[in-house]
Image: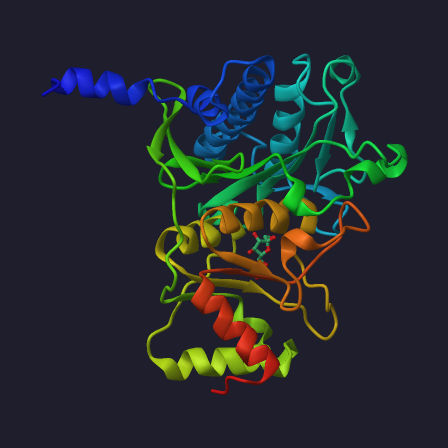
Length: 340
Ligand code: P6P
């Protein structure tokens, strides 16, 4: 029986960079590059986690910049910091040529990298940032794409590809602990940041989303703006007695709960905004990739998220994501075969 010291060492060496190599099953240049890329994404996450933990003590760290982002939302100073952290973490690495971000109308191009890599990283650098002032959980969401060979780079048309083509996707959850969850298409795996080591250490392998859960997660404040089908699902959930409502206002935190405990998260369209609020390329697609890898489902209500052919980098989509049986109940309410 290994000693506790030996078990501790065995745990501590299961870092994110080594796990990526294990996922590739090789030490090829491609595997090494992907391992390095995940490490740089993790570095951005560590910088953001550190800033968040001290934000209340750092002058000018909190509050708004006075700018409005491409989504028309008030930009928090932490949004701008997080965006800069991802850009700086990827410069001079040779790993990523373009960075698409919720915080930038047009992607950042890293010319020193482009001769070595054509990969694009798409991020929501700090999702749910309105939670920061209340010291609640927020997250970063990322997606990795190989540009399409047969589409022009002009206007970034070569990135407008269905989410099923993602090479990798994941998120970093800044909560009581900082966790990184990712997939390269071989299951979903989570890592917990050990600040004393400065490393993300493997904490859960091959996460499977329960077939069914008790949580439904959406902002019921919009009830009167939703379709009859969504309203009927809410009525059904209220009358079932087996559902419980959880909604934090941060997609990453709400999805993480669904991934581990089961249930369904919804951000439906409304009559005024039928496309909803969430962005396809760097919110819905990465989480849908993880959900399907974990045995779950992600849909607009009429189409699988991962099958959508994008028309623009910042387009929005309705999102219904989670356990297979719970999503099925939503879809049956939408088609009218299930009534409250
Ligand atoms: P609402 C945060 O702005 C976000 O994109 C998601 O993280 C979150 O789930 C949702 O929007 C919250 O939006 O309209 O409920 O405040």
